[in-house]
Length: 276
Image (cartoon, rainbow, N blue to C red; front, side, top):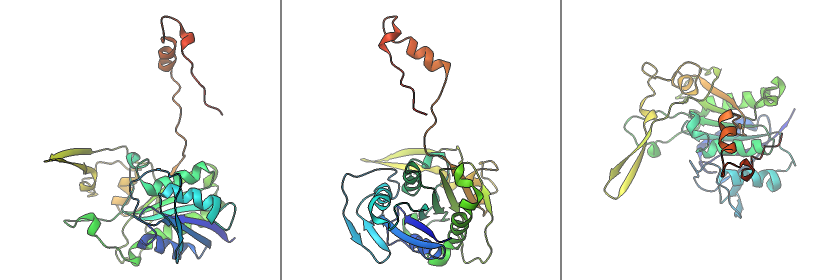
């Protein structure tokens, strides 16, 4: 079966990661690239009212956000009215843990697709760094070998397995290939709940620190088995099947809180129940 695939990212249409996935996914079907014209990393699900679009050798460059790209691609730019799947990536840098799901532009593109009821996969690659600043690290096409293998497999087999009958999108994180010829194994995971953001002041500036990246040594990593961070640190491909809508909390504490509103008269409060 030849698939219709919408491919986007948040690193920008000229990044090596999106070209790597374009070449890999083209083996499975028709790939339409609709990606940001410039780097939109960590912009989350920001959306625009109007964006310019220019043609690019890979497809279309949108002067906007990853969410803009998904909406524009699904509504106007894809040759099919309904692509079979949206793929976002491959991002240079992992998107691990619960806290990045609303922050990452890569993952947010997949979430946007999920709200359109289109299956989606967000693929990111962990890039180990030593003393080199992350923005100075250069990646080559061969570095994305695990990303290509895992994404192609999940796109090709995901529909046949029925996985997307249960998950709206997959957050996939792969190890850096580093010229290896071995295939990294897949592991179904849950996003790690660890969080270690803080900030320090330097004169008139505040510098934000994500301290988790200094703790990726598998020998000392505190994240438990079954988490995305543990899998990637140990050289496996992390696949977290997720759903987009937030769950509504149903608790007696909320009922008591609503009933206590106003001067002893709960008629002043209205609790709107979500639609099924």
